[in-house]
Length: 328
Image (cartoon, rainbow, N blue to C red; front, side, top):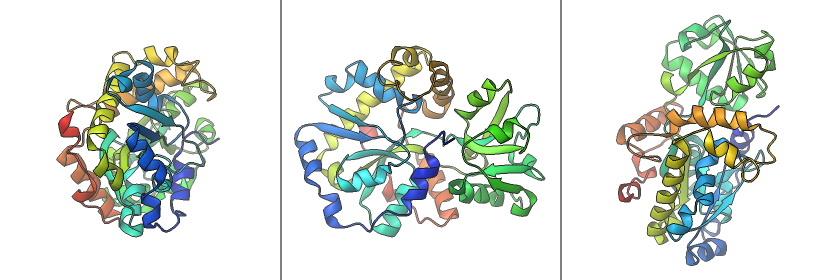
């Protein structure tokens, strides 16, 4: 089963059509700016990964900032960068590798103005009964890797001085069943979600983040078109302020809002409230930061740039704009 967005979105990202000036000058974008509307394109269906925005909508934080927030759900066929280009939404939650690759190879006029996840939640998951606690422990093991994450895994192994041939890599399709059955030793997936699924089978999972072993990427980065940014900086500051308030309120008690929102924003996904509480709790240390949610430190930006260059994406500091965060 496909449990997360990564496979389809990143696979389809390579098929984005060449960009034109018309892509970035949509009438719908102009109308949104005139109405103080910020349409946000999410990357996946409505689950706890996006709960901070739902809390801000429920509690009126956007309205209090004079922002008409329009939340657009994602899914397996949604590429957030395409929504930016088509003018469907001027703001999208993306990942730096696909966003910056669109900038460098296709001329997309995008800026990253914030980072929801300070560390990507992608990691290596194994069973506590057969633990793979770190990258070194992968040697001699069977690791299931989604095709879209192969470059990240290959980069992680190289950065840590491990020959790719030392790890038996097999395909993974976002179903932890082979892990639970003991057919493989570890999987690459969201560490904030898969351990819950494993627990339903009566097993305990352990995990480590790819980030902590060299894959130093943000995730759910707040990306905008340069055109919208230039015309709507105060509006975007207010949007970031309200969104930050929603996330901060949510993290006061990660168990509270999954229950309050189960029949509204979090309904119809097939996920249980317990699953959303687990994910919300696991997300907190990867999102919350003393510098304020969405912060991008110079060290964090440099780490992203370093990794992207390591895998052949020519990132640079100009692709990240921290000036709006400084006004929060």
